[in-house]
Length: 636
Ligand code: PRX
Image (tube, rainbow, N blue to C red; front, side, top):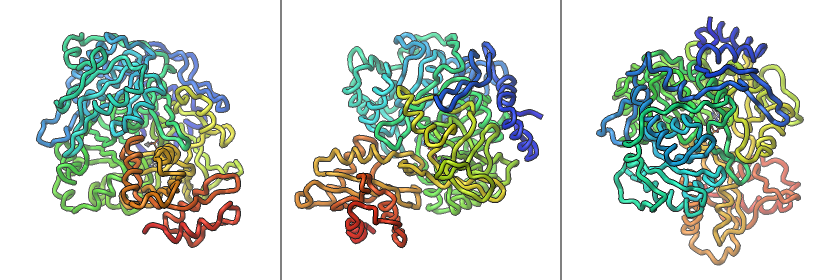
């Protein structure tokens, strides 16, 4: 029996028990047997959640790209590592073998070096879903540079904030990108961002859409001629297990985005281990995760986890609705995809379309279906099960976070009996706890509470870039000696977990984490706005949509409300990105506040969700009368 690949429920229990009783031994065995280390660790784990300080595989030496590429060369050199499917179905797919990937990553790594990038430097990657995105990520890892991938849907202001927060020296981008029938001027967005980023010395540009762009002398270079000149051999930088691998920004409930810092050894072990088990990947399978590499799901389960297992991982440039809403299923048929991993928001959107668009394609290759990013509602779960999986593919509802690095709670397919809307059981090594409002752990089953984790796991983030205090305050201060996830959860009668949603000011829209504060800041910058509050309300495709309550400085001055709504949304789009636009904007004469001046979002949330039968206690409000007024004017 191997710890690494669980094949029965009995085995799960056995492995889980061991992982909790002897976590160090458990992870040591996994790490020893399945990875290439240049030097073994002196100590498996040292940790202190109060500082917080977490170290896995201390003093071990490795390079993650040797594990993801080099060590596969003698057995899988001609196996497809990355199967790239372009936006336009008429453009040919690209099969990048492990050998090709090795040469491409090495060339790119040598280009980075030739541009002065060294171990520890931060490199911002702002690219669409093209092979160079994966290559650039791995090239950074090859030479020990810290990659900070910014999702290419973020605006120039959001990009600039992220570049400056981690003082990136270089930006890697493309002339533009394709998204369905549209093309987007990515380089223009980078140019605008860089007006506020004095630390960026160079920009490498990948040619994707062949558009006319501005190249700034002395700063911008096309990457292809540099790659053509570069050697395809690059000795990997030997990294310490705790050396930073990447920074990835996630929204917080307060203003600035948090640059979650992940390190090398533990992250590799954890993503590889969870990939193997959660998708039950077998040697010749074709695995497809539809996420963007700009999010953690893409980092862990398009790039690192699959490649560390020598898998074939599909990377899709386009959108599910182009050229029509059968595109996902067409790709499954075309590439005979075995494991398919997507988000509930995509499932809900596709379930609204003609079911003939699914039935038209041969989906018999599918073995496992995955879901991630937000709770999957029962209707979407059954649609996925019936129409995509034809009731023969287990659905793995995987709960995890940017901060956790990898999947934390999930069924193991063909092992854990699934239950709609339940993420079910913790992965080996994960010790969840539900906490009540008094800080006590809620024991037993059929209970709910705030979801915490009691013991470290190798994939967890180690800090917030440049702000360790914030790491402590956000995750380790709510409950003593525990990592607090920000989510609520319940545990059913057999111990299965169901994630019920955020208990903080983060709202998940179409699977994207959005903090209320940055959006409110963007709204408040509009000259007409005095104050604003945003909340989530249920939406049948997005899961949640955003509802904004906006108080104007002078109500009389702005007569054209619809125009003002457009301007406010444009403001949000410019500051953050189109994903953060509000679905509804209600102009109000005041916002309900506590005596200490805090906006009572709980009430606003109920009003926006039309759940006003029980508003709770409003007597502690400074201005209870505004609630009546807001309810009268609520947008239907
Ligand atoms: O609220 C949870 C929700 O997404 C949050 C994490 O978002 P992010 O860091 O962007 O990572 C998303 C991809 C891993 C969580 O705190 N979430 C994620 N997966 C699920 C989920 N909620 C319910 N069920 C899930 N399977």
